[in-house]
Image (cartoon, rainbow, N blue to C red; front, side):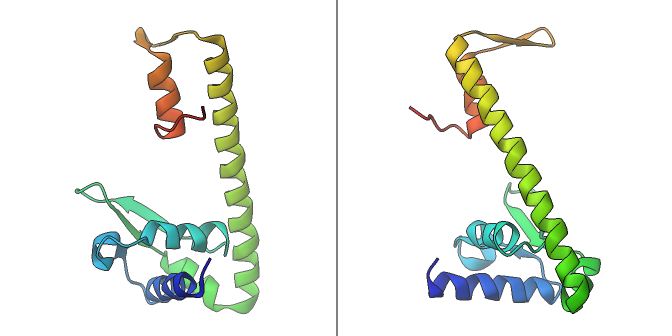
Length: 133
């Protein structure tokens, strides 16, 4: 990551630590999601998100988490907990991708609750529409 994006990521973190909600529209559609991803998945700081009516996300930190972040001993504990949560989510995502791989290799159709789902739809929903081929 460049120093420029590190600076913007730090700016986003500072704003959330001040209790502000951030939305990409506030940054002229800049890469807020990438900055939040860095804060969560590399710096291991808990950030909450909620979808808005226009399908963008508001990102913020809970007041309790801001207090923990500002306390040196509690910050270490917060980092350990967030790191464990990030690892759990990564493992879950890998498991889902493995399932897609098995489905793709079997070239079958999945049936769920009396609804038939095509292989392309199942693969697309689990991979965000991206093909690995």
